Length: 490
Image 1 (cartoon, rainbow, N blue to C red):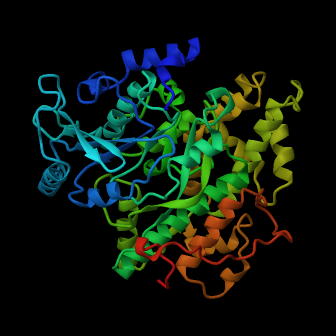
Image 2 (tube, helix red, strand yellow):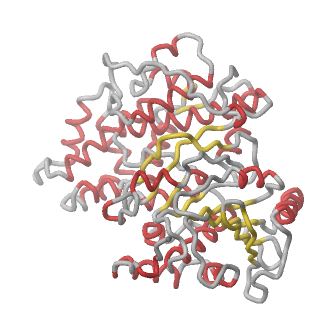
Image 3 (cartoon, rainbow, N blue to C red):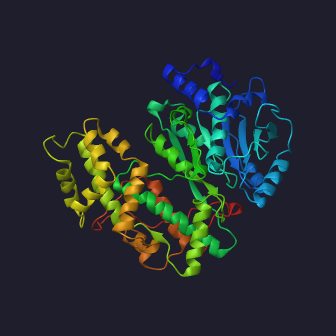
């Protein structure tokens, strides 16, 4: 018999945070869900998927949803468009709605139409935001679509309708691994926020498209993502994780405390995870990857699809794929180690922060302390650190958050260390040290090598002179051929 969450009251603080979010910040759909579900809905797991111009391709993703260890799965699909959506999006959305069972009365008279449909793993809850009066604002787009789905899931979880303590978020063009729902439970179970992560990020791979140029562009994009995360990790950043909206499992309480997905047309995943990382760890879920589409897309102004399209333009123009100069991560590491020393009380009050910065900079070749200090002052980081020096390391690293980290990186890139070719960055980066990259190497095996370094979770060498530690190259993992994971020469 499945335990009933109605018999497991939340702790007062948690209950207050959840009630406040649902009352003040949740989307209207969260109040109407029970009208389309059973009077006492109960599911083992929940999965939220926005669908924007997907057509019948959505069905392939839904067909790959695996069983969950806690029983039936509720899959919330938010079919959406805006007033400015092109005609092909509108047509594809109608195909999606027809494939999911067509339109019906749903919660007629109560705002956004909702329909419950059967699915082999449980139920679909289809939320139709394509009708006149229900279109999404153009500037909110996918962020609002994700928020609608996650808010509905949160409302159900809060009243005992969802057993698993994780809200899963993905996209309409992915294929799911067999242990998708069990993996976060095995990693953290029902741990409360104070003792567990605020979010999990699943491992991923991009699928190979038939067009070899598109396939190469997708691989380069993924290699760039992995290179950047490894660079952040080598610097000691607490924000060294991927921010891909199709790979998330969220703590309901942390989600509510962060006030949900921001209503943005892009980068909603980055901004939510940046907030969640201040509430608890954002951890990688290692194992069989989620398989992501490597297609070109114009649905959002940046992200995977837009990144692939931009790379194809660079190839056409004969330009290289730009990557951050590895020295940027070395300079970032100097600052983060200074913050840690400050937070741990290793910097007496009579000593200046700049002196501490100089000490850490001295251990890394070619770091200009005066310039680094100047950049940090311009970004407001020095003032924030001075003001919070007595509040501890965690507070200081939270103040220098993911957004400030990105601004720091871009400041160095734009004014001091211009981007270099991706292949050169990987060869030069001491935190990667793949010795075989000096010779011929295809993109697929490079991608796999970086993924394996990520998965090792071992401390990475800091920037500076290369040490003796070398990560051995690894062979590509074997993934079912029918899922088309790239392992071929591209």
